[in-house]
Image (tube, rainbow, N blue to C red; front, side, top):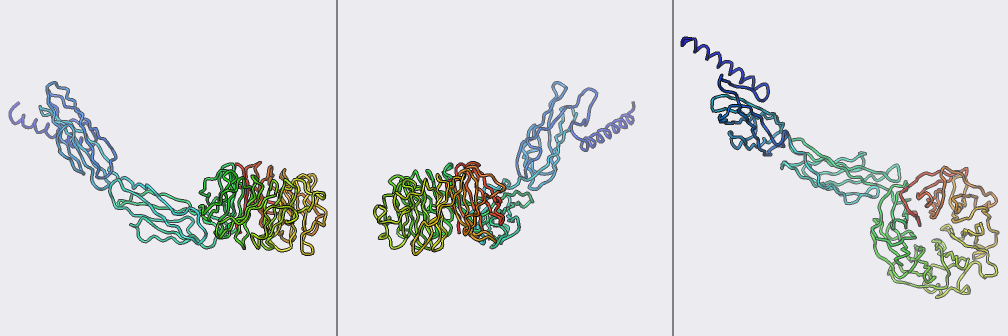
Length: 548
C-alpha cells in the first residue's frame, strides 16, 4: 500500500474511534474506544458509595480495572458534570456533591500503556435530606374550652439548610397564632363553645427546608367542658383519672396512690377532688390539673370522705379505729376526731341542710351530725344519747347490712337507705322539725339493693333509682312507691360497685366491675334506660363523682 493509501486507512480508523467514543458517552458503561491488532482494550467499572447522595455530601469513587494483556499499565481519569472532584486521576477519587438537587454523570476513562481505551459511566441522583423533627411539645394535652396552649417544635436539618415552620389544626377551629415561618413556636386557643362535651383536635407542624423538602408531626389535644366531667377511682390500677362527660380521658392524677378507694368534689380548686387512700391512711387534695396540692395523714384505713362546701371541712371515716375525722379546709388542721361508730361504710352531706349522714354497718344504723358550729356540735364519742342515730335503740332495729344512702341537696328531703340483706329501701322523712321513720320500707324483693338515689325524669318528676348487687335496676316515682318497675335497657350490668347521679336529667354513671367498664345510662320517660357512654380499660372501679 502506498503512502496516500495508508493515510486514508488511518483516517477511517480514526473516524471509527471517534464514533465509538461518542457512542460510549451516550450509551452507558464499559465501551471500547480503541483496539489494535496486538493489544486488547482494558475493562473498567465504577463503584460509588451512594447512588442518591444528599446535597453537599462527600464520597469516594473507585475504578475497578482489568487489562487482559500482561504487562500493560492502565491510567484512569475522571470527569463529572457537577460537583467537585478532589483530583481527576487515579483508581479512587473523592467527590463532593453540588448544593442543589440534580442528576450528575460520572465518567471514568481507562487508558493502557499501548493506547487502548475504555470508559464507564454512572448516573447519580443528588437529593436533599429532609429535616428531622426531634421534639414536638404542647404544655397541656387536655384543656378547657376557650383556653390556650403553647406549641414548640424542635427540628434540625442534616444539610444545614434554613428551616421554615407551618402550623395547622384539624378540624380548623379555634385561634392559631404563628408569628413568622422562621419561628418554631406557636399558640392555639381552643373554641369557647363546642357541640359536644369534649373533642380531640390535631395540631400539625410541618417543617420545610429551602429546597422544599419537608417533614410533619402531630399532637392531639383534648378540649373539654369541666361541668359534667367526672373523677374515677380505679383501685386495681392505683390511679384516679378525670374523664369528660362523653367518656374521653382528660388526665390522670400524678399522685402515686397505694389503694385509692373514694373520691369527692373539691369546690375550692375548680373541679379538682379529694381522694381517700385506704392503705396510705391519707387524704389527698387534687387540683383540676391532676396535681397534688396537699395531703391529710394519720387516717388509717380511711374508707370514705365528703366535703361540706360552706365550712370547707373535709369529713373522713375510718375502719381502723372506727372514727370520724374532720379537717379544716382553710387551715388544713384537724378539727375533731369522733369515736364510737362501728365499721362505717359511707358518709354523705346534704349541703342545703348541713346534715352529715354516716352508714354504720357494724351497728346496723345511720348516724347524723351537723356540719355547723364546729367543733362544738361534735361529741368525742357517739353514744346515742349525744348523737342522733337511726334506729334510736337496739330493740327497734330495722336495718340489716345497710350499704348506701342518698339525699337530695335540698332542705327537708327524704333520706333513702339501701338495706341490702332485708331487700328493702328504708326512708327517713322530715316531719315536725326532725327526721322520722314513719313509713314502711319499700320492698325490692327479690333484689338486694346496693344504691338508691333520686333524679328528675322528664315529664315524670322526681324518680327513685335503685340498683341491686346483680345489676338489676328498679324505678318508681317518689310520690308513688307502689308503682315499682324493673327497668329494661341496652346494657347488662354484672357487678356494680360505684354510682354517681346527675339529679338534673336522670343520668347515672355506674362503675361495673363485672364488665370492668364505666357506663353512663339515661333513664327514658317510659322507664327504660339507654347506655349513652361506655368506657373500658379499668380493673376495679371503687368510686365515681361528677363535677357540677
